[in-house]
Length: 252
Length: 86
Length: 152
Image: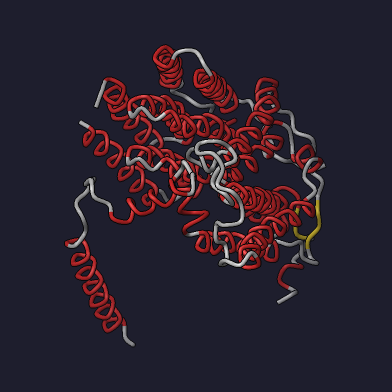
């Protein structure tokens, strides 16, 4: 195909897409209206299952299967990163020298670290009650650990971060979600159906049936996945070096 | 007046996103992206979607800049080593 | 619409524009300060919105921002230490203004909430944001190791 034909094809496709999007926009309900057919049904269902946060109810109960897909995407992405960023034969590890961070920054990092971990756990645990949930809390907790790198140096972080354990945690979190789903099948209903546990009292920590458990599984998976992901990037940026004198091209 | 708030946050998002696309240097782009994350979180909160705002903040404010800057550092170190051996 | 959301709108229109302009133009040393300013300003704005919408649970968003915003700035301070060491950051005045604004907003929202667990959460958020913003400013101005991660 010549350049001209390709451009025409692009213009045609773009025009078609624009026309379809425009037609779709004409049929949209008005912005900020007070009638939401799907919203009304979703809220009714989430209240029936005593889940105060309707978004969590949609994510981990009514559409729990979709969330499983999203979680698997993260799992696969981290797996790919681990394979791509591994230490190859023509690379070696150089131990970074201890870094001297200004005392106020160091103090701030050490004081904030436990607070941030606690906030991460809080966000995971209150997923069925208030905004947040496994994903958000997991990322906060994983980020908190890296305050050790920012406030001290990479060695300090490595001491509290056995990557192998976090890889196991990542896999365990993913399988816990699947096991909870299969438990629904074994109990005689459907995959990931929220029928295993009593729904509890509305607006308390133990409400929403399996929603808090699924949140915990996702929280563990996401926290471990983020730690493993950052570990690979940090290894590459801080420790791993290529062996000297043009060995990098010899493998081709 | 609530529309005013939506308009202000939408304009902030549009301006920051344009700046993020226009920035050529990855380091500066990471900085603009961090601000874009905050602007998006504000927009989501204004549109009554705090769950999404939390996700955006969790990913956009520290994790993404860290990943981007670590990649930049690795590429720079590589360039420096290459320069030294040649 | 009430006084809380009006204040948030004004703060976001003024401070947000300054932060976006600062981060999108000029030298690196001003951009990092603008990034810190954006989080220092957004946190009180989120508190104002939570109060204005009468949704106490929205405070969680501000709490997470108060934690992660300064961590983000520390990331930039740490990994750009070499660039920032040569010409240290400028334009910290606006950060001080934003910190003062944060303190005022936390005080006002606390007064409106009254004593209780909600107030403790607000105070924690405010303390994290103010200390975080100041420490991040300090880190930007020569607080981080110059050589980054040098090897032995």
